[in-house]
Amino acid sequence: MQVSATFVMTIYEVSINMDYIFEQLLLFSISIIANGLSAMAGGGAGLLQFPALLFLGLSFSVALATHKVASVALGVGATFRHLKEKRLSWKFAAHILVFGLPGVILGAMLILSVPDDLAKMALGILTIGLGLYSWFQPDLGLHAKPKSFSTGQWFIGGSILFLIGVLNGSITSGTGLFVTLWLVRWYGLDYQRAVAYTLILVGMIWNGVGAFTLATQSPVRWEWVLPLVLGALLGGYLGAHLSLVKGNKLVKRCFESVTILVGLSLLLDGSV
Image (tube, rainbow, N blue to C red; front, side, top):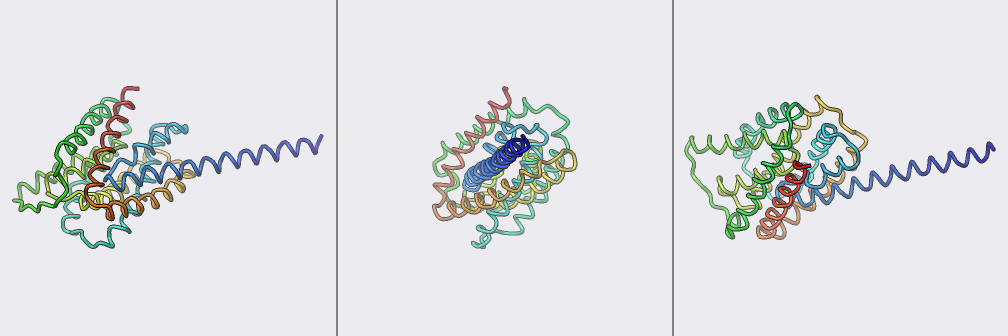
């Protein structure tokens, strides 16, 4: 009887270990796909990653905090690839951070205390609109169109970045896409360069600040963070590489496709 009990316990422990390994591989695979698409489109990693965390049993607040912590690695992976090109202006990067970060902190402080279903549905409709707008503007973002701004125009652009920052801190999916299109439409960047700024500044710094703020208010499923981070690093690097190699047309199409999918996902999530 003792031998039989020991055998059963051994089988049970092996089963538990196999479940754990499968869970870790599943998280890693989801993260690679989600962050690879996000690195090409300039946002939208939460389209697959955040719902997957909810599906695997995490509560909204824990899934949100875990997703935000892991999503920082997307910016790190993409940064390694984009910095090789040396095409970014640190003065412009500072402008994005100065206006955006206060919004991120505000949004992260508010999200866990307010209902979000209506916000998700409204954001879903707006996000789909962004994708369709880009789709019906065939030349949008294919070529850079440098602009000279007055102080007031810089402030208007920064104010919109602040509002997007609030959404970034509070909503899980798609806000990087807003930044990408705003950089293209208002500041005249092409899609490749806009995506680079979004991945580095939003993916790494905005999300980093948002993750820290959320982690002080809600638990994080730390044992899930490692496979998500590793997947984000690899997916972010590969997606950024493809966006640079294939050019603006691929990036534009990825942006439009992911934007519409994120919007539909938000609408579905908000209506449940």
